[in-house]
Length: 328
Image (cartoon, rainbow, N blue to C red; front, side, top):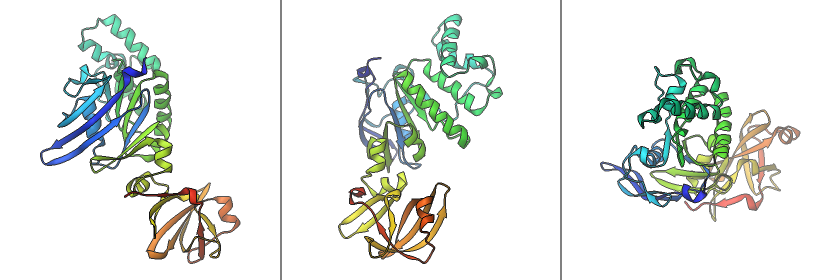
């Protein structure tokens, strides 16, 4: 599929519910053929954004462009997008095949054609052997793959996923995110995935859009957003960072970039507050001047070769290249 026809763009998109602004004039050009995660806390505007792209919420102001065409006021089925819902919304009385083929039936496609296309989609998600089962005869992961096949049968240019892994147990969630990533690469279409899980976004996304208070706080390649957060909110929400107030301003430094040393050799003096063993790593929390807390994530080998305990006075050190100044 030609990448140019997959371009999705938000132009000053706003969503208001009465006096409440849920999404505030956001702009973003999605990378073609990419996996993008909309990430943020509850109420930040990420789900409203996804639902506006899908056509399940109206756009108060602005435009949503797909392949250069304004789709903002088109019906969901006319947009070139498909949405996979959080609860999967499978019809309990229909077989797996008939669930997948349902949208084709609504379009008047003949039974033989829609069954053939449904079986093609089921093969794609490795469910051919379960084609004749009912949804309640499937596991949660299998139900998710049926919902995925049903969304993909419309041949969308963009697949929209609303927290698709939240109903799964942790082990299955990790397995399914691998399957989603693999499927996106095989299909070569854009996936836009809403989540509030930082680990999920980092594992899946080519690009992460971090939203907060109805606006985009930061967007970029997943590694860039994690390694170089621009704001205090992004640093703290992504996790794995300390936010430290120094005379020159506010800075973020990754917890695994903080080293423990002697007071004489440290950049800052600190007092150990807590030590937590985490298997491969040890998390050490320490208090510095101004009642600020700094966490160092150390390998278990490094920590136990020179262990520290609550109350110990230590020095903290990091490479200056790992210190990122925050804009807000």
